[in-house]
Amino acid sequence: MGFIPTEKSAIKTERLTRLSLDEMNAFASLQTRTDRKYIIQNTTCNRLIKEVDIKGGVLDLNGKRSTMYQSIYFDTPDLDIYKDAAYRRRPRFKARTRLYQNTNTAMLEVKTKDGRGKTVKKRTPYEVKNTNHLTNNAKAFIDGVVGITGASHNLQATLTSQYQRTTIVDQLTKTRMTCDEFLVCTDWENRSVTLPMCILETKSSGQPSPFDKWLWENKKRPISISKYCTTLAVLHPDLPANKWHQTIKTFF
Image 1 (cartoon, rainbow, N blue to C red):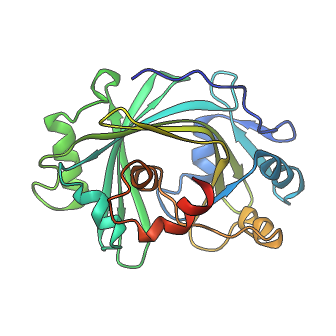
Image 2 (image 1 turned 180 degrees about the vertical axis):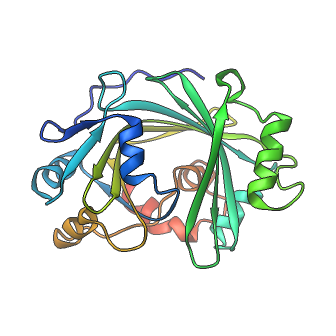
């Protein structure tokens, strides 16, 4: 699947300093982190950017402050990875390839969640032509990260998500916020679901970020959402989905 056409980003970042990918990673790589997620209107996101007290920078790739992402998620035919998340089993993992439109590069990413809820992401460069399937080397990488031989057995492409992302960093607290617009998710049966609002995700080493504090002061609270699991539950209502029931009821 190619990239879908999108509107121009509505996120206003004029007051923020331009950061290259290397500069952003120097401030806040955060591969081991606590994530908090929110669904808000773009107008609220712009108020946050304008009002929050940070030394802010925005990721700029090839002169663009937002970029299209395409992620392909892999699961077993019985959706065991989905069910691990639905039933809150720990430890658990998620595997995906991610394609970056602005640079035409790709990564293989494995996210694990430990018994305390900490998310750890490991990734490695991946060939763009292989993003819709897992090579033998990719399977070995997944097994190594998860620590279980055969963890990648039977994994197949299950859901594709596409969205436009703006990434903002607070250089003082080394925390990060991503704003995802124009989300479209398509399953293996080519059924799709969209979300017209912005998914905002804060990433920190544990303590609430300035972004979280502003959101809480403005009566916005974290919600349970996974681009993979929540949209798959919308597309397949027969799946167990109590974990995301309120999110689905409110926003989808």
